[in-house]
Amino acid sequence: CYDGVHTAFFVFASIFLFTLGVGIPMLLAWFLQKHKDSLMEVAFAARFGFLYRGYSLGRYTYWFEALVLLRKLALVAASVLIADPFYQLSLGLIVVNVSLWWQTHHQPYQFHVHNTLETLGLFTLMVTMTGNVVYLKAELYAATLAELDRYEWMVTTVLLLINIIVVAIFVIMALERLACFKRPAAALMRLPCFRSHAPALDDSSAAGKGVTVSPRREG
Image 1 (spheres, rainbow, N blue to C red):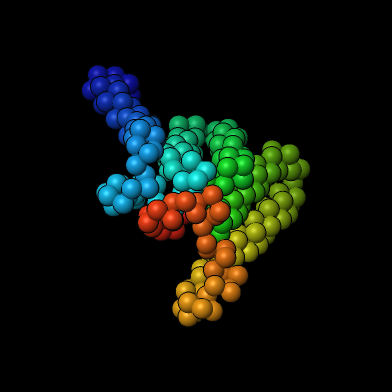
Image 2 (cartoon, rainbow, N blue to C red):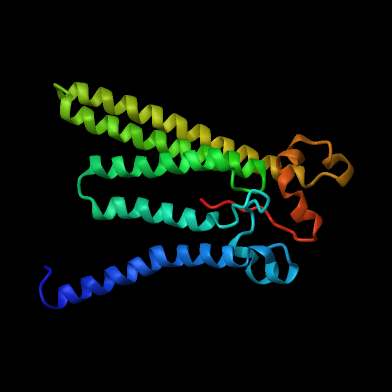
């Protein structure tokens, strides 16, 4: 390894991955910032709306997709480039906690329900990774195999229950949304599901200018 042809391929692959992983999100953020005054124009939205559709224009988080890409890159890099599982989880927890803080503080999505689901998803990921840290520590300090098994069952059960509950919430909200949009327009306005899927108040200006910003979440 790291000799001759392997070194050349390693350098090429590193440059290529860095360009794709970091360069594309940065280019995306720069492009949207450069054209921020055109985001609500119908012609611009028709061509480039997929880059920021679903994010809040009123809160100026239209570039949030770039941050999501960088977060995914950091999590993948932590799992691939770091061999020690404890350090993998430690770096991953830092990334997820920062993302969770940013999400709760800025609420980047246009629709309230999407902000709720994103926050819930990040919180579940944080709890799952913390449970893995607990299990790794149990492997080091458990006196017997029976004690280690108890830790394993406890952590696994808690994480499984939390993830089942979160998946159930996602499914319920998706079914609620399907049922919501099957109602007549007059009844729709009175339903809580309509209000939860309505744009935030600070996005009303975008809706008033004829730009349709369809809901979208990134997982």
